[in-house]
Image (cartoon, rainbow over all chains, first blue to last red; front, side, top):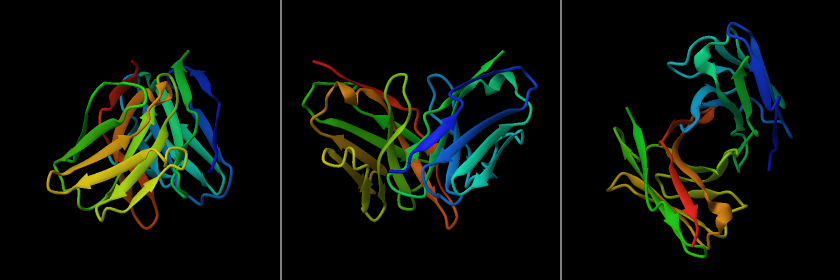
Length: 107
Length: 120
């Protein structure tokens, strides 16, 4: 299985801050990398697919980059409604695997 | 707008079979891959397996010996059976559409999730 390692596991930031989360795959996954946002008690919501493509309806403050094994997810200006846990997920090989999650809190 | 809704028992006894159904509304099931994903309380996400409308399936090797996913096009539903459950199978179970293209593959639509507890 491909292991997905997210960093950091938790993050505290202020409204308006630029927030960055990284995700590293244990082997080359090209650009088959997705990012999800999960709020408490809710299903995950797709934000970014194919490493850098913004899902329809997702605010433009969210972005993703990277290819191969190293990927970055960025919120350009943190908003209060962005408080959630964020997961990366690879779809290059079966079984699909997720990172362990990054819990984002407001400072 | 495609929507997914999971249904099934919220409590299953150890050693029995967990059975869930996902109903697809607002679109046809005969055009995509469909997945099951689970999340134990307070933990991360685990992909269980998927099915294509042609009935071809893929399973996570960690669960493969216990999992069966099936699809009923007449009802626009797909189902999960997980046999010989233990407390470790206690989780929120999600169904999701697996949207596949030439350059990407992502779970773009999810059900709300259903909590299943394994306990006697």
